Image 1 (tube, rainbow, N blue to C red):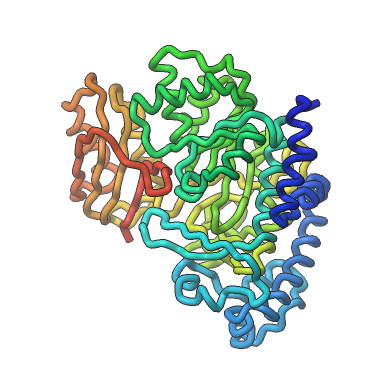
Image 2: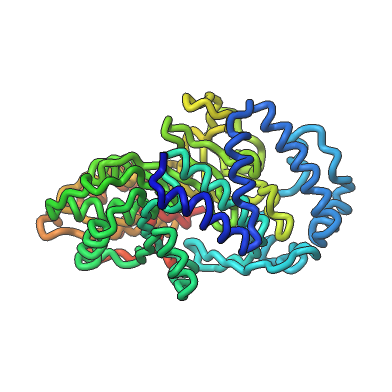
Length: 449
């Protein structure tokens, strides 16, 4: 049974907050908590009904899709299987940039403008309406409750998005105070900042953490180096998202904070796609989001093979994301989770397509092949690998005073062994590595073709 204050916030204050904002998240969350126990066949029937209704809505009110359906000779609303969605073309960032205005529904009201730059720095501008927000809030709320915590429990958020950090006005500050949520900027990870984060955690004693894996791992490592115990704060779970979660990060965060780590996957553009349950299953938000895994030619991959995640968000009629290419790579799971939920699962999220590197001879390999070379080197505080082309790779290293720079030739040799003997390996020692503009940190970035 939740503490009295948490129960008051989750059952009264937050629902009132959502109602005043015109969101249906409370009713949607209750519906999701029922449908999560349905069989896969029942969920697929729900998806098909929603998909047909969704496409009819786009035909009636979204100029881009009305014209697209006409060109394809497609009459929406008559699909008899989910696989028929493959008749529609894939949607990427270039198409959205080129047709942004035509992708707005003529019924869209109070659409909020968003943009995301990613690693390329080229912004993608899109719009989100209240219906989409309600569905994303409900999906995240459901997943939060899987872990025995709820809205109103003390929460510490380590984040870097300018959208959240730039919106801390008085009203939002009051809301966060009532909900017992405290937001800390995750851009700078200096020693002084890390000391401040540890002090803030000890002061607040949150029941849950939320943030980038790299940010929480940096804090955990700093606390360990300082000999500062953090497993006595009563933290029940650490939610991580927006970056690939590596096994060593999970182990470090869990060990230092004395709590399980719950991985989440999604994005501001694609929505709240999947979340891990306490039994370990990475469940898709299947009631709202259709997920396809495709190869480089846009064909579905066989079960058990990795493919690019392509999503259709069924609550985005105001500004549709239909067969939207996320650029992320994953493997689907065909098991039923031990938790008993019927929601389908991702077996493995391997990261962004740019987290893969290409050797000189064209062999594609995951960036882990290079990460493993660096991550266990004694005295190495941080690193980043940028593959500029098949023939040139830059390795940025942040050494501690005890790091043996004589290891550099061994690093170069190991990289050449994987990428090719003729590849230029440029090792640079730097004082720090800046995160992306969003505050995220990426270990591997490949621009190779």
